[in-house]
Length: 180
Image (tube, rainbow, N blue to C red; front, side):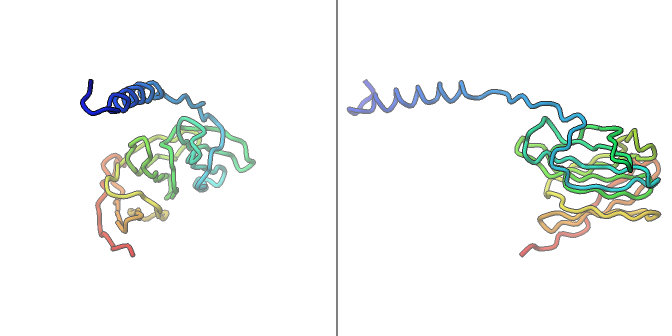
């Protein structure tokens, strides 16, 4: 039927395999992260000293996303906002909170988020940047300084100058250092 003897068995096996494989693809349903902790990777203190921000990365893929949880100095969870999975690090400078995220297996790009943290219980996203050519591994900021820096696993270094309003801030690739 298909030419050489025995080839009909091969084609029948191939068709059955393709049909079975197509039937296996399904959407995964993850529980909502809400106020749970899931692989917290970074913690920083709010400028008031009364709160801490916890970056949940959900490295184990137990939930549907990552998050940023605000906790009081007594350890009470007081607020949460959804965030990209694979959060890596935080930095805070006055009321500016920076979070960096690695890219993930779902094709989500690595990125940097800049939040207004004036009200610790109500973070507001001011600006977000996707980083196409790197996975960020560290972010550094200092109070009363108008710049912050992001380093990446491929040797790239980005610098941002805070602008007013913060949504006008721009990120620039400063240097790509070779990795050994």
